[in-house]
Image 1 (cartoon, rainbow, N blue to C red):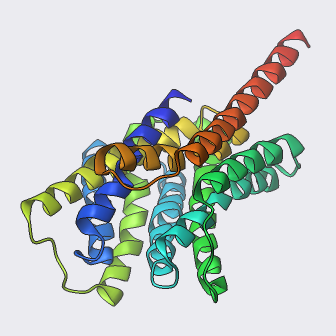
Image 2 (tube, rainbow, N blue to C red):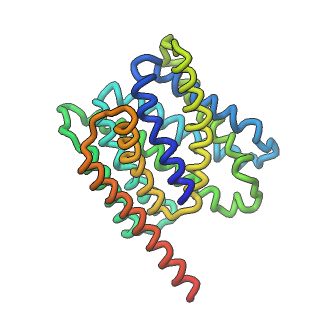
Image 3 (cartoon, rainbow, N blue to C red):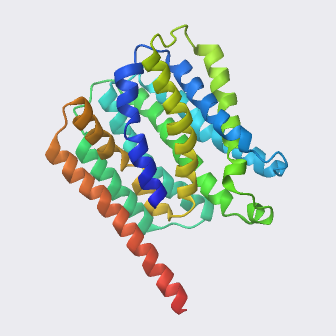
Length: 292
């Protein structure tokens, strides 16, 4: 879980950097394209070009969905909803993670669903604001982003633990470049079709894009997905909402934006409780398995 915590802290700065320096100033599709291509550039030199075709293709599909398609839904949602509404509707991601994981394993875990529900409730405590009318279309668009991000995490976790990958194991850093190749194909097509000529105009904007691409997207997604293979589905689901209090806290401390501190504390404690419950349950199952 250490990797997930580190990436949560890393990504906590991204929202504010985008909101303060890029949003409304740089074309969103160009920002996404730049981030993904920079992330791909970090990992392409590490690719083992003898990667089995099944592994390469699987990772390309996962990257196309988890990162590429997710961004397309996500940025479209800002044209339909206010920022608080978009953030509010992202809190359903943990539920999707548990349900997709159970579906792939062909069993249902009430415990994982409970952990996800606690995390969702904690995020809702922090982010609940009055909703404007006519938001259902936007709600569905955000759920498309949530489903893409959730299914990509679960698929990566399942694939890395599958017998097919264990038959031809390679260090994850040597195959993760295929993830960004798949994402790059999707966002390149989207930028060519939908992008506008609104490019960065200052060195600060270019520097932020470089940071977001090489570090937040490149290193961040690699460590997050690797961390996803080391925890239970319940913990992974709960950690998806840990970014909300972390991002709000960074925004409050550095950019002095308004935040409701009692709600931030209460919601953050609920999310921490969800993660702790999941970890406790996992340890109990491991101890029981060793006894048997």
